[in-house]
Length: 69
Image 1 (cartoon, helix red, strand yellow):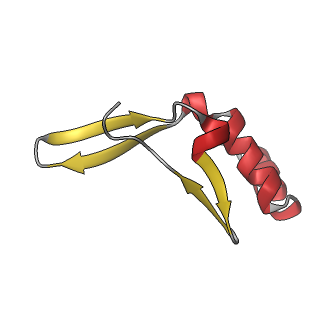
Image 2 (image 1 turned 180 degrees about the vertical axis):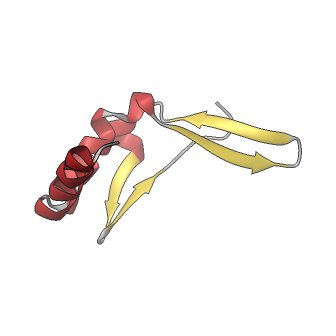
């Protein structure tokens, strides 16, 4: 990532609301994999229903995953 791209990303973060940031994550959820360590190794989880599994929690954004999928 070059300096211009870095500044563009920071600008997006600093000028958007939490709701807008959540929507951005929902839109790119198909590109996100969450790695969860288990006793048997690493469980790679996808977000199957981004508009249901990504929610606001006050100023935070919750991402709910299903370890059984």
